[in-house]
Length: 59
Image 1 (cartoon, helix red, strand yellow):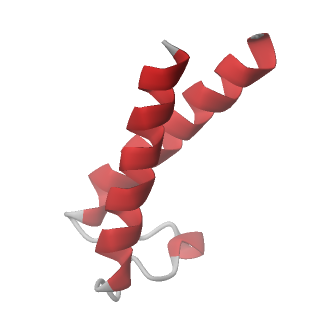
Image 2: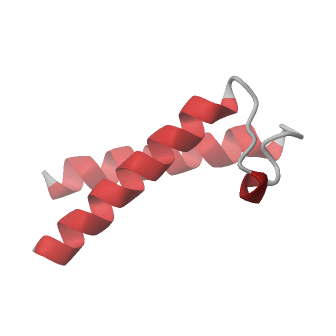
């Protein structure tokens, strides 16, 4: 599971960074505002990051 979770987390990170590079509203995530395309990418990254960190703490 850890490899699969890690791979999904890294893919989500790559997708978010690629999107953010060319998206003005998503350039500043501290505002909590994202474009309609960026919001799901950000949410997926956050969810997978939390899951991965929880997995690391528990193993």
